[in-house]
Image (cartoon, rainbow, N blue to C red):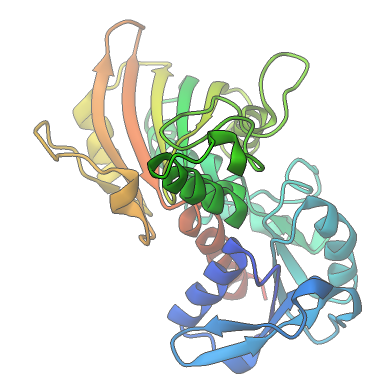
Length: 339
């Protein structure tokens, strides 16, 4: 049987990617409705190669008869409309931060904790984790299953597309401006400092303990998805890359684990590809993973500065696996096992 989808936030980076992925995975255009705010009503958005969908108004949209809502309109909007969709009988897969730490809402990465979907009926809402968390836990889960991970130290190198279209525009305009002698602050709106030819150790707002909210998300979401006893220290950095997040991850295990044991576990893990050759070009960069569905792990090596230590390099397309694809995979698992 076919299911009726509504893509909320259809004109944004993630919404457009969701529709592309639904089309790639064989969902008919007749089963998908594009929904967004009033300023986007009447716009046409592409669905696959041959179809366009006219955007409907979220404020007046009737979710009755919709089976699955894939929602990424921003946290405040989602807080209002996701419960309305759920009350109308749809299952909402929410890509915003609003519901992630709600104890009654499953926070799911299908390769890691698909079993958590059994609790979706609590609120008819399922949360999609943060992009940087998703790719990290896909790599951590098979290792944690092999040998318990006690501590994670991660530094992220996050693409500007994580800040939406405005972030991508800002990098483009600032880069162009460098070559025509435009003042670097002329295009400073999305980020706190110029991003072209720069890195910014600041994503989301600062918290009382000195961490940013993006770093806090990685900590609490990893605990909720994998194991509440894992200790996580994160430093999240915005870098001048359009698409693709990278992470340098150092792990401390309860018992010894060799690089080769870790490599083998990752090779056999769902959603992971290991590209780890100790030679020039023997690793994956963000540019190479753009448009890909998998999480790539490279630079697997033992860290002799700590007991039972291991270091990894993890990259993934933040718009696909880090957001849109994970949401679609949740819907597919839901349909297969629960609906």
